[in-house]
Length: 105
Image (cartoon, rainbow, N blue to C red; front, side, top):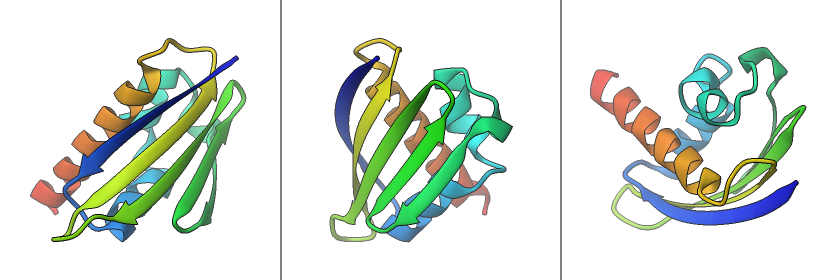
């Protein structure tokens, strides 16, 4: 296993981002597609600003903080057997899901 890190801005409040990370109904749309885990295999532990997400093949630790004007800064430390760009792909998928939720909700 390797650990990779990525940082990304997300155009939503930290609470909205954290809710998307921990919502079992949404995890399939942004995490499991990237890491190949089943949605029922994912477990979350929240102690904001940190959210830990575990599955049989790895672990993702998100640190979600406000960055002004209703936006967030998300730092992801991803440990699993995926490639170097996997943390960036996870954050991009998360940001896309948050945006979908805000546009449809």
